[in-house]
Length: 103
Length: 158
Length: 268
Image (cartoon, rainbow over all chains, first blue to last red; front, side, top):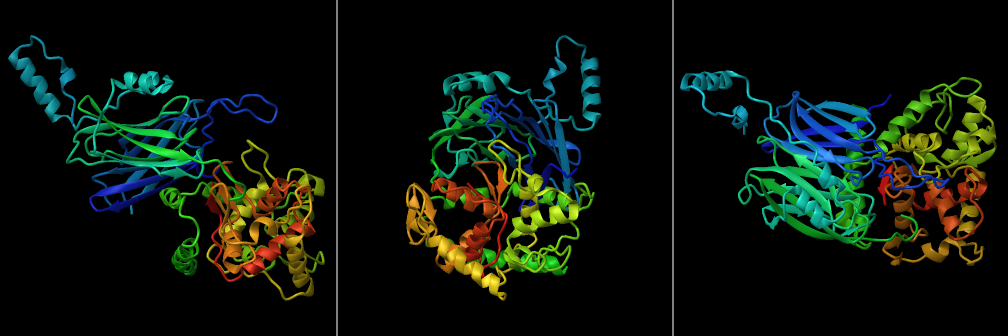
């Protein structure tokens, strides 16, 4: 099963820039399908960015974050080759994660 | 910034306190503990109620560099970027993204420990033309910057 | 690595060419598009498409690995850029969707009804297999010059048919494609209407489809785009893989020939 997260981590000036794209419908629960039934809310609630297993960003999201959400953060102290990991969990209990090495 | 206060120092003997501090100092750096999800704020349906749930009305600060497009080609995906000018606003530990005219204005919360730059970039749904707010929390105080983003109706194509 | 080198040069060329191209259009959405950058959710659909290509399916339990998109069985890199083109095994000119339909029926044993039954995603869907395949196949031509084959008599006849259809007025509004797409500097609300009769306009359109469509959250193909234009003109349905859609796409591709493919794009 293909990864549901695309992460890039790059060293810039004095910080490491992380850009992550996640695959998730981020349904608000307010839309209706073809038959008129409401599509249940299904959105990422919790996102963590970890550097060498230490949490460097903790994010909480509502359904107003766009579908296939994007996240950009910056942290200090990263070095080339270090591992950056992004982990998410949604309101239905599903989760996803991905990692990359810092360039 | 390690949070040593919850040791709850009351009337302990000097020796006990010293020992406790010594042990704490010898521990590996305490893992930063993020605050819990502000569920009440996420459930708020007005800007005022959202601010109240976050701790009160923020004061405007130009230490918050808030970027949003003047006009969004589609309201389903509106890129936003928040940077903090730390020479103006230091110790920012939380950033909130608020879209005033959404059914629930609070869209996202970003919490950072001291060695993470207070910076966040994401994409949010904007239901209609209106104000977006970037709110930063530093030392328990709330600051904000607002920007209006217009949302267009599509033509065809594109 | 050879591929990486070509990609690298392509990115530079696309950047330069795009800068040239967009300077004359309205700048209203420049800031919006710049802030989105190149983080395009189409990447996930591309991965899906690649997986589908190599996954056995249908009564014959075969993958699409032997599918000939014009450069030989299984050759995907560069194939999209040379479509639409004539295929001897069916004696007609086909676009990528018509060709995939052919491969799915021939190699995998699916019936035309099965392949054709749901040509495009409906509102709220998460994407079809065909859309994912087209996304991946188009990505395999990213950076390469649009170069639809025009050597065969039927290929040239298809272009001429496309041009005729482009100017053909019909439907309750008496519209043709040219009604909206024959002049420069026109728009509907804030959407610029490219002049598809010129190289620049046609290139801009043809190179950026298939595209991840933000308003729908899925990848849509050039064939879908044409079909939706027809729908908006209140014309009859433009059937996927039909002679008419292949002709119109050929018209665009030939007009835009030479410009680099930049698909999947990212659109509203």
